[in-house]
Image (tube, rainbow, N blue to C red):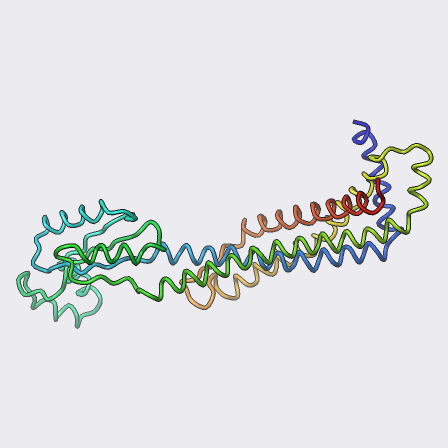
Length: 299
């Protein structure tokens, strides 16, 4: 309770310390700025890659070509059998008549061609569009469907889909490791910077001990100082994140390289990223300060 009553004083002393040890404070703030910019980039890459991966997973469909002689009732019965299989999310029936009508809508040439086809001589196949729950098991699911009676062929972009998902998953995991590593490095650098500040104020701390100051009274101002350094250090990364990502989104028209890879909409997405940056900045600053005081001053 005493620490909270003394909080205004601790904040005042922390601000004085920041300006009194200006060169060391700038070093800490610069470290936080650089790291948070890299963290921001890593977070935005991770979330957008995750969005692209999810979009690909949602769009991947197993196209099952079915015997064209099946009646609609038989086709419906087959679809129900597929639905009972594991890893099946949905099954859509596309009859050869449906495909004929779609072709007719594409161009006048196609319309003239398909108009000569009757129901008996329609060369197109019936199809089942199958969406799976777990894309990593899509190969096994496709093989099971292909073994079913009346299924003539199964296609889903085999080989390419698995490679793309594996690459994206690898990027996601890599970005998470990078973000975690950057946070650890920042905490370490700030702790070392704070150590220099503490060393320069060693006599001041010894006097505080001699007059009976408690461990909390000595430690808390440094923690508040770390909070302030983290907060100040997060300002520039936040500005760069908001304006930088918004400009990038507009420049690439909301997608990267191809419409398949759609970027996250800037707002409120960037606000969430900025919230994470502030949280990381102040937490790392406080933890770095706390560890430096505890470990090197033997409080």
